[in-house]
Structure formats: C-alpha cells, structure tokens
Image (cartoon, rainbow, N blue to C red; front, top):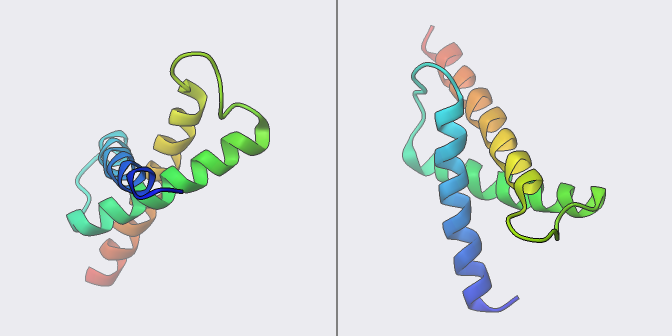
Length: 89
C-alpha cells in the first residue's frame, strides 16, 4: 500500500466515524479523536468483512461495504459512549 492509499484510508475512516456517530441516537460523550479512531478501525474491519463475503468490489459505489463500515462505526461509538457513561456514575 502506498502513502496515498494510507492517507485516503485515514480520511475515509474519519468520515466513517462521523457517520457512525450520526446514526447513534442521543449525545455521545466521547472525544473527536476517539470517534476518528473508531471510524478508522470500522473502515478497515468493514472492508475486510466485505471482501470476505465477496461484496468489496462492485460496479459503482460499494453500498454494502459502506453500510458495513458505518454500522460498525455506530456500534463502536455506542460501546465507547456507554463505557464513558458508566464511568461517570
């Protein structure tokens, strides 16, 4: 993987993290950095999962892969927000 591929993966990961945060209802008390890290991890895991089930490379936009990534980011953001909430009480 070239440096441009890594940079684009990071940018996509940040966007995925933001979308994941948007699909989770309510306010999440986690930092922007944690949201970005969750998005990057979700983008990587979602891409891997899409390639395993054979939907990573389709004609046009890979909607199934994107849905997997955003869903995983939502789960990650929810998990971290729940952990942060339980620490406060």
